[in-house]
Amino acid sequence: MSRPGWDNATECAGLRNRVCDLAPSDWAAALKIAISIPLPWYRVQSLAVVVTTAPDNRVDDLLDRACRTARTDKDAFRSLAVLAWVIDAALFRDRTKEAARVLRSALAGSDKITPPSSRARALGLLVERATRVGEQNARDAANALFNTVTTLIADPFPKWRNRGLLYLKRAVVTLDRDHRTLVEDLLTAHFGPDGAAAILSRLDKPWNDRLTTLLLPKPPSNATSAPPPLCPPVNLPAPALHSLARSLCHHLCSRNNDIHGAWAIGVLCHTALRSHPHILRFPIIPNKPIVANHFTLSRSLDVTARLAKFQLDSIAAQLVFIEQGRFADGAPKFQCTISVAIAHRGTLGTGLLDTYCYPTPPPRPA
Image 1 (cartoon, helix red, strand yellow):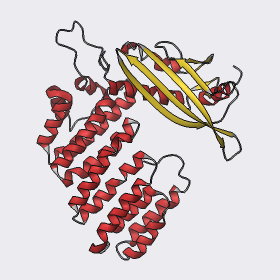
Image 2 (cartoon, helix red, strand yellow):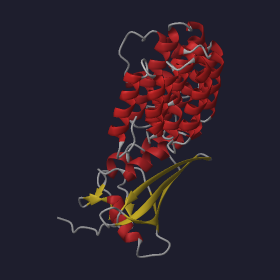
Image 3 (spheres, rainbow, N blue to C red):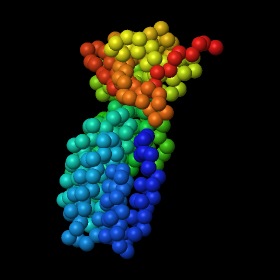
């Protein structure tokens, strides 16, 4: 669950562990350590531990403090996911109403988490807690998770489809223990009777990518031919287009995506500095390598070859480079905003991703 840039994460984790050891015998001393932890992710977890041993008259105040601390984290995933520890602590101290309030607040902010795989992971943590808060809370949390999972299993890349199946299975197994009727209702609403039956019959069996063929929307009954196995439907819904656009953003940003051995984003940054503003625009054409400002991106044909089956109208990519000072080693630092727009039968899907880079002169071909 960690994210890049946590220079003192190990130290903070050590302080959290110290709080866990100290809280049962001296909650006040544990609270002092918890408050001193600089990273909100570990500070909230530590405060939740203190809540479990603090005097009853301090519980509500500490729960409120943990929630306020979580909101200070600038990362949407961490800010929401860490509330799972707060809900656990509230339930441990019989504060069911407070746990429900924290859960509703977390669900309301879940749309801010990107990409969908991270949102599904955070919602999965909340679903586990929601089953102990109340059935309506479990329904709300599961419904939010299933909405996200539906987007993942429609993704053209097997990695994300399998990730969606993983989160779906975890949630279904958790809910099936005490809320069987709820699980059946939600699965039927999201995947139809056949999809729900397929999922429930496989709870004790391995899941694989073939299950997505049962969960994706079916073509009309009068259709002359079905779409190829493992492919999203021809009429891609907006969530699937957004997911596809974000996947292309991640591909463009990948360190494995290079130009003559150098990171493509760095080389394109060097090229973009020749003009003002520093913007590069280029199309992405199915079954053809991606060419940006006369540079061909390696391995891009492997990705674009998978796009042909969707019959997309157009794909446009844009890179915007903004100077942000210098890195610690003195190299010029630029923020690169990668955006991709996909048009398909009157529907638009968009993706956005930020990264940091430094200008890299294009190496000569070997």
